[in-house]
Length: 142
Image (cartoon, rainbow, N blue to C red):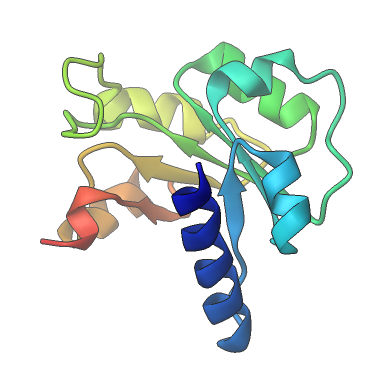
């Protein structure tokens, strides 16, 4: 939709002025059009890839060992792994919990960020369980 394109353009322009990088969610054409720094693929799109896309930054969401293995095979730059906890953005989705997250993250050959119900005070637990950091949606605003 035009509103999404306008919002994304504003984000890319502002971020680049501040020296930050922007990945567009699951839309390589929009990323190219806007001059974004990369693409973040949904798990379904990740599983359809046969090779790493030719982009400076490529990331993906992963929910299980199969998806994480695909991300490692493609040598992505990083992944978001979860949901670790129940999340408002994906109500009812099965969660990994910290033990499940750790079992997957510790064997990964790329940086893994915890997502799903994360808040700032989860950072210490995330690091103890092998995360490089946190990814948040709702937790960023509360």
